[in-house]
Length: 67
Ligand SMILES: [Zn+2]
Image 1 (cartoon, helix red, strand yellow):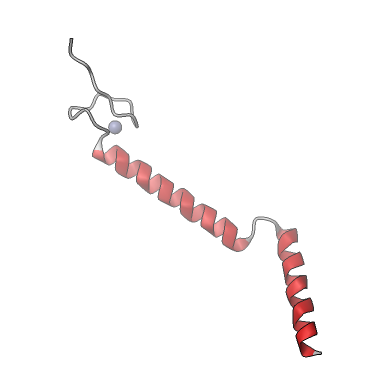
Image 2 (tube, rainbow, N blue to C red; image 1 turned 180 degrees about the horizontal axis):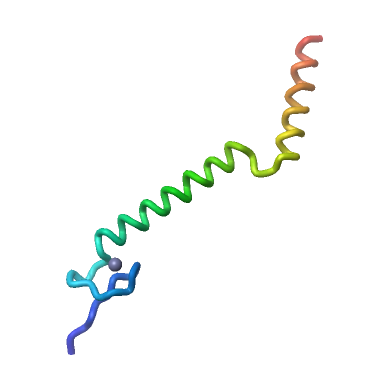
């Protein structure tokens, strides 16, 4: 019996028995994009209220420094 090996990404039969190189590349790029998006959200601050509180805290610290 011949085992049909499939690419785990696209679920299509793979001649090499491994995941297709282009499929792996697509997954890698998608992960990279998601990672970039996550980093952007983290940099911007997902919570606007938290950002305001942080700004207020920084302002407070700056005032204390001036004294
Ligand atoms: Zn594939």
